[in-house]
Length: 64
Image 1 (cartoon, helix red, strand yellow):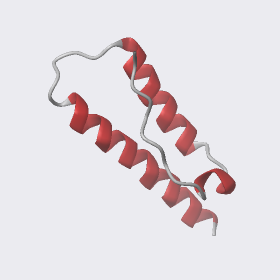
Image 2: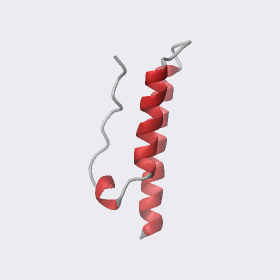
Image 3: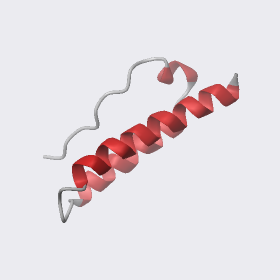
Image 4: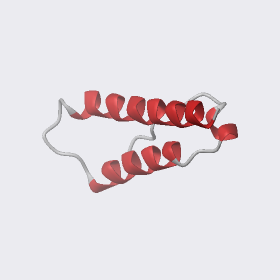
């Protein structure tokens, strides 16, 4: 069961990365705040508990 949760966390993290890459691919630069937000989103997903993974994943917050 632990492997399943780890795989789910990795899949969620990859989804966040893929969505961000699609958005950033069209731009030549990104702010440090956007990089920080993306890294924090991925870190939270990879360190999530089973209860955290049971909810739906929200879109990463856009930098202001």
